[in-house]
View 1 (cartoon, rainbow, N blue to C red):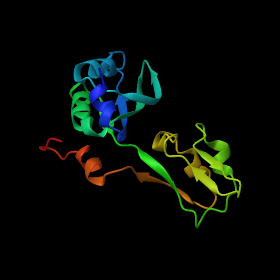
View 2: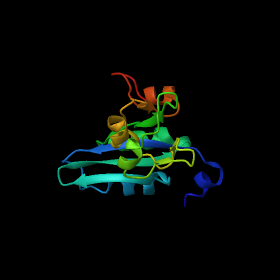
View 3: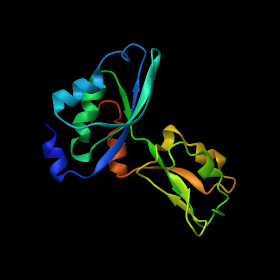
Length: 159
C-alpha cells in the first residue's frame, strides 16, 4: 500500500496535530492514511475526550497534501520545534539526561552530551530546555524554514 513512499522516500518530517473536543473522537488519522495512501508514523499522542495532540512523522514528499487533508477536517497542524545543544555552553552536568522521557539525550564516555534527533519529541516535551542551568539547550525550527512558513499561511493564501 505504501510502497511508493518507502522505496525512495527516506525524508520524514514531523508534524504536530491538535484535535479539538468536537473532532477528537473521529477516526481522522486512519481516514487520511487510507484516502491518501501515505504512511503516518505516530511518535507520541496525548488524547482524551477534551481534545489532544499527536506528534507524527510523514513523508516529506506528501507533506502538503497531508496537511491540507488534516486542515479540511478541522485539525490544527504545525511543525514542532526540535531541540539543539550548544556544545560551547554545555558543561555536561547531566540535568537534561535525567529528565528526558524518551532517552534522546545521553552522556558519552567522555561525559559530553549526545543528542539523538530521531528519538526527540521536541517542543511537545521541552523538559531539557527548562532543566539546563547553562541554557545550552534551545528549541529550534526543524528542517526547511520555507516549509515551516507554508504550514502557517497568511489569510487569503493557500499552502
